[in-house]
Image 1 (cartoon, rainbow, N blue to C red):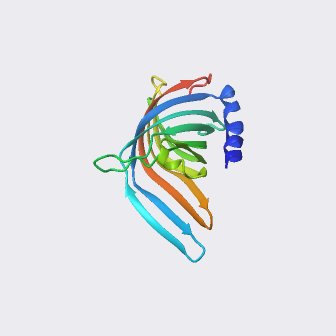
Image 2 (cartoon, one colour):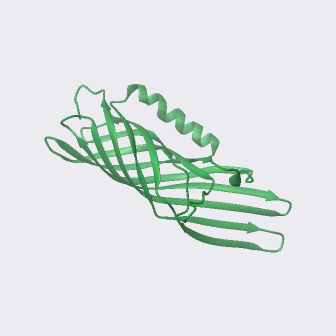
Image 3 (cartoon, rainbow, N blue to C red):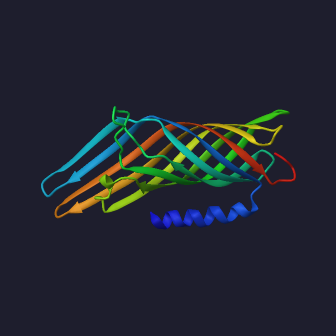
Length: 208
């Protein structure tokens, strides 16, 4: 998985130099239920549990770039830092990790007016994982997994700067450890809706 992350970095970030639009964004994540698939293997038995947990609101910070391939179709890439996952309980207990998706973007401008345009967005990439507390360090294997999302964006064409986005995405993380004949594997799936605002730097002569 680390090789996959490095490969995506190498494919995405050199292209920033030649981008037409550069986005700096932040916003709030409204999570669905965190889904945990827990598998415990021993010599005599295997136990599989599916657990769902309500999460507290999160924050995210993103940087993205875009090239227009055609008049209404653009492609690019991005990186998103998602805050630590916490349960929606009185003590806001941490799960001990956060996710950091690295992704490709496909954008289609389906509605254009004099002062604004509305676009459909699709993301596909890899969700890296970061450890935020000691409780997850006991897992010797810590890796991210598949990341995907889709949503809509509104861009202000008058100022060429204001940007609003409503998005649904799923980040994933895997943790596993082995001790003697016993092995434990936890697979987390983190679905969420995000409300994002940001600024756009436009380097194109023909402003989109």
